[in-house]
Length: 417
RNA sequence: GUGGCUGUAGCUCAGGGGUAGAGCCCCGGUUUGUGGUACCGGUUGUCGCGGGUUCAAAUCCCGUCAGCCACCCCA
Image (tube, rainbow, N blue to C red; front, top):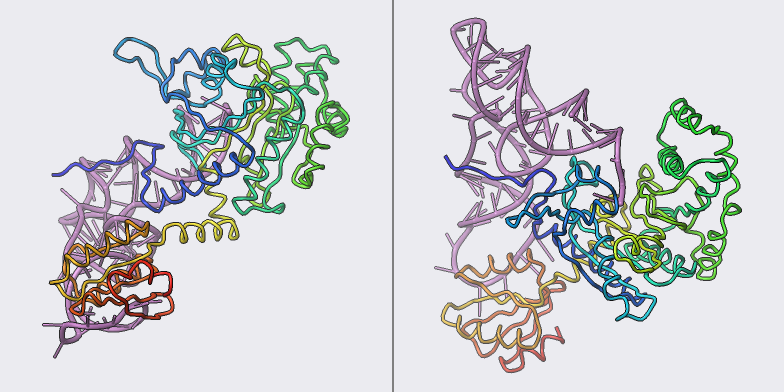
């Protein structure tokens, strides 16, 4: 009995239609990054496990695809790009004018349970500015993120940027006498506040001698608690993008390395999932690469955004249109007389040399079948090669207009049909 | 790691102790040089796997595995 194989849990096959969707998202990512002058880079898929431990501590090993290689090195499939970026940027930062505007599209791996919007393997767009600590850099990347969403067809009614300042909370913690360690615990409590039951929240806060009312009052102050947020907002206002942004101090992001501005993209319609997120990390490059390089970055994964595109009619329509245009074949060659097969191949080669995409029959089939196949593969034109060759017929499959021409005029005639 | 739901054709699913079903997809045909519709025909299954009850189990019971969803976590 033949054994059948399936993908490993959390891993995906990309059939042509899936690949088309993926490439559509990639093309939007690249287009918008280029629009802001960002340069593409990439790092290795396999890194020393230590690189991730250094940044995030030992617990992270549970979530890593890690193993010992044949040289007994502890290695991990990359779960994220930022540590590799920090290493690369630190190593050669003198070769690049600041600010460095870098982006990357790559595949990442996390050993965790597969669920909607999350797998063990996924693609992620990473976009970072290094070597500039200004609020303009923050606003520039948030603006890029907004344009990304707009280019994918989303509107103000579909998504929103939540903007916050982690530093404001650190000051709050200091003013309330928390130690550095307590502050980290505190930030995690804030991060989970939205989905923690009220009683449990009160209990965790009281361990730090805090009351929920203090937190609520602080959040209610909004931008006033931060030096950074008003500057970022002014920049976004100047760009006409401030309608997309809402100040929400409850956002602090899970990771410890964020230093001041943090933001997330949420979808408005479907349960406020986080689509993307990022923030400022002015100390991380120093930690990993021993070079002072303030940075701001964000990342967006392919799984949640694709779900959201498919669930949002106008975004899905935009994707479908773009793919139909991109994938259309120019010409389906149709063989009406077997003896003319070599002539058909010669004509197809001419057309291909001229840059046209062509399909040619591989087996002898009835003309009707060939037209049907041409139709189903989405060809724009059919070119019929038959006994009257070198006279050939060109038919527009959309409006059924037909012209006849000579073999040598094929390429020039095509534009007229 | 914890919980809920679901496992029947390639896909979406119906059926519910007595010979295995529908739609879609795919392939072929409707007399051989012109397409989307229509019609006809065809391929595909140990009903996830193992055990139990029964004259008889895809169906009921127990276990197990897998998938999905949620929790945990989220870089």
